[in-house]
Length: 398
Image: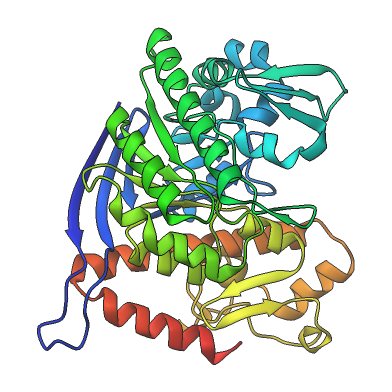
């Protein structure tokens, strides 16, 4: 089941000082709950968002999380998933879940895989077993996982392979293969009588004409929702922004739009302005484990020596557990229960596991709170002012 309701759109200001954007506000109703959009979806590759308890995810406002079809197929395997009735019961998450198709992992395997019309042959990165992943098998795996949103199996078109930039002909071949696989995914999804929702994925590399062809044909197939894939795969930022500006707002207005694998806080704000409803990225947790924290006033490198004696929290405006402790009161509002930058610097230097756990909680809270603020701005008709303030705050520096 999927139902998307469009509640508000960005509009020009009455005095003409702001031209408006493609930004929109909506609700997405799925089998395991309602999601307020625009939304950021934390990534839980192996059935867990790394270092974060499900209860913490709920407390910070996570509404939907991701699972990884490829990795869950490898471990623990479909027998275990079937025993638990799917991923929700296995990982104790009772809200919506989206699973990717395995296409990105196929792309990332590089020379370990061989792509054909039928599917992809590759060696298991776990034990070396010879495996074969097809559109039909991807649908079968995701049906067993019982994810609320199922992604079509696609070929993620690379930008650069060993110094070779993908040509338009190569991108076309890849895009057309993904379209043929999309039809096979639809047929198998229907045969399995999967009660959830299947999204199509727009491909086409960095070529607007191919993106438009892919989009047009997928819309004809009438998927319940659509994603833009094949970005954030090594291309220069300006190339990604060009495709982001071209594609999302051209997708059907009455269906959800998902930009896959993106990105920084600036990317999220720009993506919303371009009409995107849903985002995911490993960046909040991966950067947290590597000592980079996102704040309202820019990015903070906790490993820098200047933080050794700093008594401030990571972000004085943040109410996450790392910054505000159990009180939930930010430092700016008089709270003093959070952890200091000096303490988090110490944990990182000592490789204490609490360090990346707190950092992950903070980064995810920041991303989810950023999306909440954008929803509130769209509700209030102040998205243009929000964007200007966001840019000024991030430029200020920590």
